[in-house]
Length: 439
Image 1 (cartoon, helix red, strand yellow):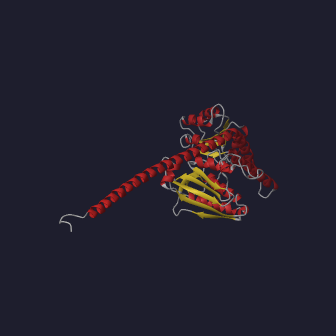
Image 2 (tube, helix red, strand yellow; image 1 turned 90 degrees about the horizontal axis):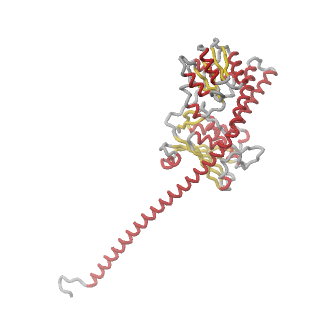
Image 3 (cartoon, rainbow, N blue to C red; image 1 turned 180 degrees about the vertical axis):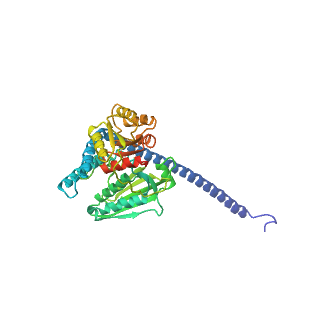
């Protein structure tokens, strides 16, 4: 036996071993923790780098697509202005003639055909331009749920689309976005039709509306805005990487050239960018394609567009000045307004218009074209409003940019009407402004 107070050697060896194992285990844990922290840090750096590269590539592609579309628009926009003026004259006089004919007669039918054909010509020009003009008349806060639902309903109502089903998934609460209702509904409709084209035998197309998470929204909206999306997914042929890089290029198409111009996605790209959003495409051959359109949420309440209740009536010889450098358009405005009881005088440019207003202080309204030589419409509006008791101004143009109009609408002009217009549209716009309604 060992003397009292002494411990066996084995005890010290055993506990020393425990102690060493504990130290080694602790060191291993610390090393694992440091390694894990370092690995996570490196993974985070790699993830940020990959995101940076992806974002850089996406931005480069976006700039390239924007440049291609801008180059195209630079070529065709002047042509659009001239075609709009020609169509305005044809469509306006056809509309004016209709009011003098009895419905049911051959002459009335012929006039309707002229009016419809000129309207189709205008729509074709707008289609080729890819919505180059921002739609200032229908931009408002609307529920994205309703917008997607309307587009899906319109898609399925087409006889050629009966073999397809759109499975719609929406948010339970309104998703307010500030967009051009007409243009954005067509964006969704075009994407749905592209999805259908990739599924020739028919099938189900998924269409969903949702809210973007905070981190995802910050990728698209650096200002800190909240975001939402509409996503359309098909199970068609899909696209390879090379094709996917080309889809936003104007006139690029994988379909029959005789039936498709290859403009729908380039149009969608431009419209979405104009509304402050982004459009993304994921696709794999043989699996399908997913198109995601992201938009900033609006702070306003989504409301349904109200229908105008204005009724057309004959005027009481109110004096109106019609200003346009194109004689046929100027004469059309004169004839339409005179036919409805207005006293009309005309001017062919901004300088002439300013002179007429000074000479005729009883002019109550100026119908002002924007693109004119000598002095354009914007400059003329500013100068007219400097006069004492200036008349109200209605901008009449088919070649306007949203940024230009924003600087004068509500300050130097009380409203706008787009050319070409129907006679009823012009009279309604004129009467609304004379009554004090801002258009």
